[in-house]
Image (cartoon, rainbow, N blue to C red; front, side, top):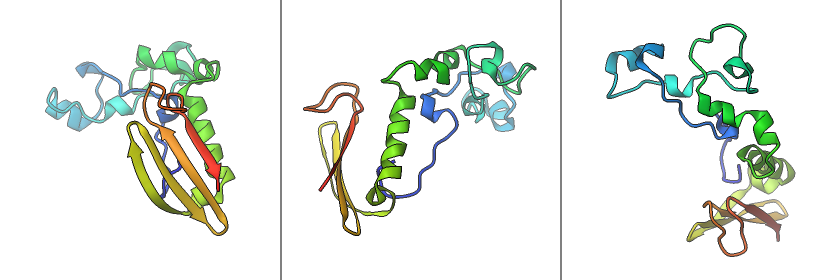
Length: 154
């Protein structure tokens, strides 16, 4: 969200949904069926979006095109909403940074460097300059908590 360029969020990415492991008999993708098991096809990232922990993740009361993996039911919006450190809250924070700072939306990007797991760079647009630091690990790094992103206006 803070790097230069267009933003694209794939369905389920904001919940941290992993690619589903499907059984051969559940596949719908012709490529996956043809080249199984060397190539499992695209169905693993096309399963229904989960909304709650009800049958089929709240996606449908009928039988969906692809099954809803049990592991996805552990990452529904309701589950992640309750966890202040969830990836859903991380995405909301990152989106709000992009909305708040014109420099992040449209600015030039310079001085990118990595020091261990911390990535830092500067974005500038007009008279606004912001310095961004992101801890890209699941452990604290210096003054940054796991996955923490800070933005400082210069």
